[in-house]
Amino acid sequence: MLLIGRDLSPFVRRTAIVMATVNVPFERQVLAAIEDGAQLAPHTPLGRVPVLILEDGETLIDSAAIIDHILEVGDPTQALLPATGYDRRRVLYLCAIATGAMEKGVASSYERFRRPRELIHGPWLDRLFDQARGGLAALEAALGERDWLHGDAMTLADIYAVVLYDFMQIIDLPRLAETAHVALPALSARLNALPAFQDHRFIPASA
Ligand SMILES: N[C@@H](CCC(=O)N[C@@H](CS)C(=O)NCC(=O)O)C(=O)O
Image (cartoon, rainbow, N blue to C red; front, top):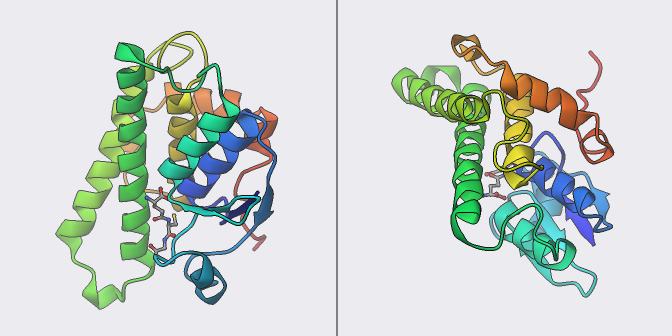
């Protein structure tokens, strides 16, 4: 399988980490959605990453749909996402918070770094920052002093929360320090020690 996209994208990184965590082997093609748009275009009508090309050539797009497939083939005991009931609903709820905050963080980056400065609409940008920070604060509160966001082992929610937390540091989301993050940095430090996280992380080009 070939995973297209780079680990700066939280959607790509979470996909790579889930694949590595459940030991589904894959190769990488590191493409940036915008700068490498011409190379990406044949694989997706939306011009977004991640894209996963299966061994028979079938193409999957959108990290949620890709991860759904990976869990189906790679996580038969449903360790990362419980099969039914409250456990499943709770993990999906926490995942939805992380995903929403990723979306707002990515959107805020495009506003800050892609839009001409004179066309930036401050109140809209502030709303994006608030939503991204709100998601992070909710996950910080949900984690509290627990080892895991839900249950007694790592789930998809923990992976997403760490990918979100790390992404917010990379983009240096403004006023991040307004919430005292204690639990998330500790979870991030623990999980980033794992090979699945180590092997799939964004390393900025040296200045
Ligand atoms: N819902 C999609 C979001 C993917 C997404 O927005 N990826 C960004 C990179 S972080 C992208 O490709 N942006 C380029 C664009 O939207 O034009 C997913 O989960 O895969």
